[in-house]
Length: 237
Image 1 (cartoon, rainbow, N blue to C red):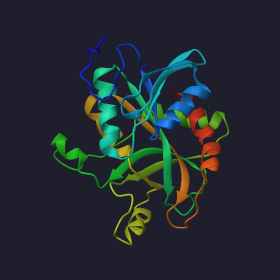
Image 2: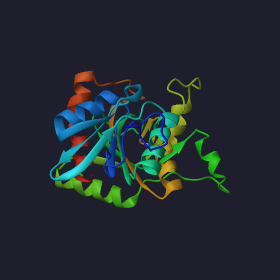
Image 3: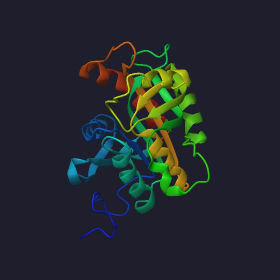
Image 4: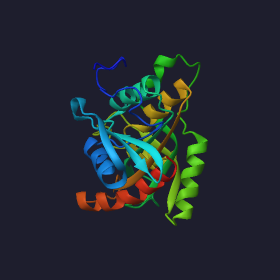
């Protein structure tokens, strides 16, 4: 039966997706979450190998779906989840490059706001500089979850960049000067999409490398550090 939802990149049927979606960048990480955390999970999307799953966690119905890399990819999937599939909350669970001097590998950053060099917000014709912010209710629940689990976190601003490799050699100094905790590529697009549609969004990020020191986690170490972030996200799903 053909889907009645006007989407060319999500084959889910109405009702397949929960009200809350966890969204890692890597679709294989979405598969990992489904197989290791969710009960009775089924795959609702495999178009372009952007896997999406719905299952149960402690009696709650939760979905998880990859977003791909960068604001254009994430915003496409997030818009359709919000607009066509009845999703109310999207929680990004991803990695971030540390910027602040006191941010260390494996630290968890909860992004209160996201500055960006993307032109994504231009479409909204906002009469000024639009500040992409998290939903406070989700942020508060995430902080409470982390405290209850004795998981140390940092709450503050991140920078969502359009360039993974930036030709300007001193750009990282500007990030640090203005108080950015880390740099990644998606959060501003998620927050702007949610704000434009009256929905809720939050980014919970694990520091996988540091922009200044050059330190980085191996693939195995990233997977190990992923669990704290996942437990916080699932608590507030």
